[in-house]
Length: 477
Ligand code: NDP
Image 1 (tube, rainbow, N blue to C red):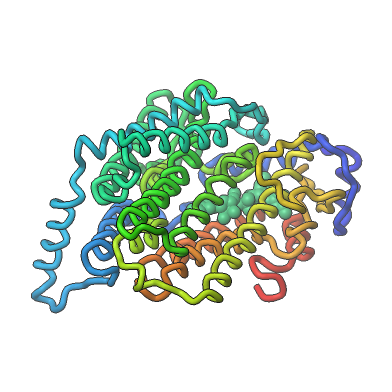
Image 2 (image 1 turned 45 degrees about the vertical axis):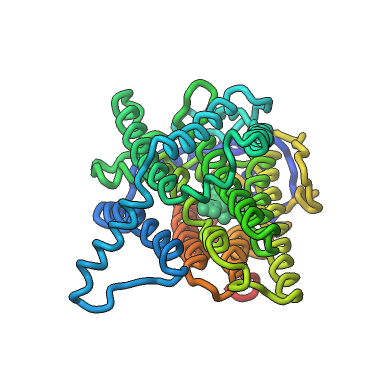
């Protein structure tokens, strides 16, 4: 049952500043709603046919974009006539066969990195953090071992030693990009199958629809673990963003070896990907508060995207720059200033908004001492936050960045993604895949999340939407 304070606050449509740390108690009504949401409700992502098409289509799209970048000057190639369709497909296939076949060498690089990251997840220094109460585990709070930051630093140190001693030159990642991508795709599929079938064999499947293709896409387990390592959290941070950053460094090293300098555009991508992985790692203890952790299952959608999609598609501007003369994407000084400013402002809002909400949620769980990993930005924690007390028991933050829009973090994240495309200007359309794709992902994800919250919080969600009126852009939308 909710506490008296909760009841009082829930009866009011006003936001409140009443602060009681560690008082979150899920009400009986809230528990009923949680139970409902732990059952399969309806098909998302267009249902079984649509997810099957996406599973087949994504790898093909990844090869297509890589071929365009690598062999066709970054332009979108297509058949020149109906008669050219079959020869076109054969030409594409020949590129894959000749330049993207998996080799023992690329298999060792990718698998070696994954194994190293998994090893570090067990042994690198870190600390324990409680996640949100999990309804399906009788509201138990799982413990997460957070050592992504020390693992990242150890990875960087190891990569630097391997590079400078010539044991493994970091430029090899870019030189073997196609083949590495194939290995990543195969790993994405293999890990998805293994996770699915092992979970079924153990009888730990959760929120299943009964349709194999759909369940394979959404996943079977909610909290897959090996010992104390949470695989979902490990894969969300340690594989995609670490590898993406190494790809950016690889592109920069390649440029340096060829031209004797690194362009401001390439340095921009090293900074942008570095900020992103550092943000994920330094705020790792906030990740259990995101719905990827407490709600999404670990299926093909997340596994494939973490293992292959993020590192090998968000990097298109890097791949373009690593394979083209710098004169094709050179900007004026004011344009560089604008580009870097856009990134840093978007990053600031992304970092602090995520931190404000996660730390608010932690406070409500009773966690009041926070980690101070570098960099701690001003306004990361809101003093005396206002919120809406829901009948469910949870509280919805209405101050800080969250007073302005209900998905302000998505807006800031999207502007970061836009800058990743803008850094090559108009030289190639392919680096704009990330911002375009991400826009679709975020709008769709926002719809799914709001739908879920509307079920979970009922009228309180409407009250929240009345207080925080805009979704993405304050005053506009
Ligand atoms: P959010 O951090 O917005 O989490 C949504 C959840 O937070 C809701 O389900 C709700 O959970 C809770 N919530 C919503 N509003 C409030 C509020 N005002 N106060 C308190 N709790 C609230 O989103 P995500 O977890 O989807 O994303 C996290 C980040 O990851 C985003 O910045 C996103 O851009 C990024 N991301 C990046 C991707 C990439 O490929 N680059 C892909 C996907 C995400 P509850 O039910 O518990 O109340």
